[in-house]
Length: 190
Image (cartoon, rainbow, N blue to C red; front, side, top):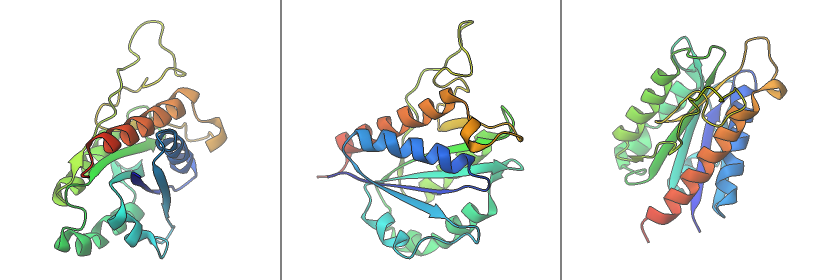
């Protein structure tokens, strides 16, 4: 069975909801999906590091704050130097997603941070595989309206609750998770 870890931090609940839809997509592929939440102190659940080592693929998620990932995610990334030294994640697949209050919000910097983290761990990056919703008929309810190729993007207005997130962004997260699960199952080492 394919094992995929979805590790994320969420400051206000929006990125957590996005992560739930990523997990739904991964689960559609029959993969064993582990949902790991980085807490407000930047720490993993006790079993988190072991799950990451046993996973075939790891999906990183963080809100974009001030043009990059949250400090809690960064604390996790810095702590990953121990598995990095042992190359414990070498040849695993990686992907990422992010949310911010602004339509752009420099989200690509967060995705680039995830890509760099994956490359340092000798992982292989998997993009969304989604075409953009860029026609005149496209709306905020369309899949991949924000046109993320390197990672799944979502936008939540600063005065919107997680329950008010755009359905198109959540559908994008689910399609992204399904694509990642399918890709990892087809390409993982036997």
